[in-house]
Length: 438
Ligand code: XLS
Ligand code: CA
Ligand code: CA
Image (cartoon, rainbow, N blue to C red; front, side, top):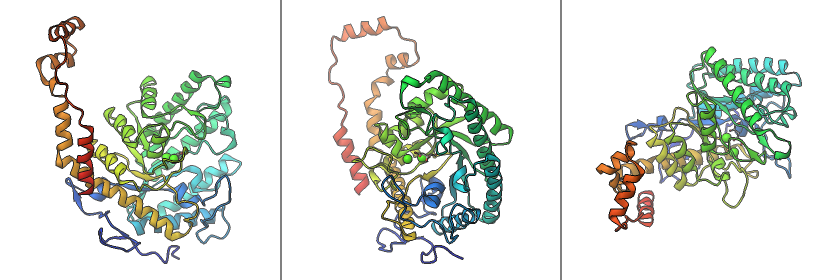
């Protein structure tokens, strides 16, 4: 039985359409810079927000019914009802990927062996139900932050036995990711950090996290996982300080521990802003290091200092994000809507409105970023700004062949710098608005 009976399959109708259940910008087959929109934008559904979260917050219980017709929640019947509803939801939107934590899929038992059996059963069910469709896993992960045993961290725990549970969950989650055809495996270090340095051995904890990642990489490769391992940076929340603070920090960590060949970044917009960066900044830092792997598509609220996971609506930001993605030559991963409906938007229709908003915002961003590149004014200005480096001296410095004394001599000859080039920020912002607004 269909769960979302009242909602039609969502089609592209164009910007003039007033149909609440139609795309205004996301036109899957439209070709942009030589590729279909659906190839530029491999969208994914986040199992935890869409199929599990019911709007409960610190101040009140849930508002949304996510039982999906199963009656009692927290049972295997409910877990299967979530699978059925997820597939119907994705098919109605034309979304081909999903992302999951182990415990999003099944109720967790006190005994990890029972949980693992349930995971085997539910993933068999997912494979059976998605057979003949083009629906696949984008990435999987282990939830190593919810269970009380991880209160002092998972890879960074003080307790060897807890570390074994983290290892067991990672092992199982990689196996499930491979089984479900996933392209990536994510480490988000929710409890990998500290509340106070008074009780924390930072170096020791970071070495242990690196060992867990190394073992995960070796195990994954041994069972045929050819995809990318990903770190998802976040500066804080739930911890006061998280080790994977931002992309630069996480990339430094990977290089320090020799993991940079197998790992890339999964950049979440809201985590970027929590770190005091723009979304574009985190994408740029990852891109220039060859480590832009995947995106968690959402946005924060500028008035709130926490991880709100709003659906992306800001086309200024999605355009700058897509500019980085196009310059990156696309993503190996995809665009996972790690976003949740606001608590009062509690109906099934709201779940669709949210995804239509997010998909349209990124489709619009793609169209405008492509226009920005084709327009060429911004790239032309950047070439102009750095053009002195094309001269003999510039090339010599770039090749590492110049000496400090020789450069100082040149400065002494020049005495002062005449006519430095203007940064032209306001002009460039005007160009950007011109492209964005038409
Ligand atoms: C939480 C994170 C988390 C990761 C996956 O803030 O966004 O949901 O994406 O563990
Ligand atoms: Ca995320
Ligand atoms: Ca988040």
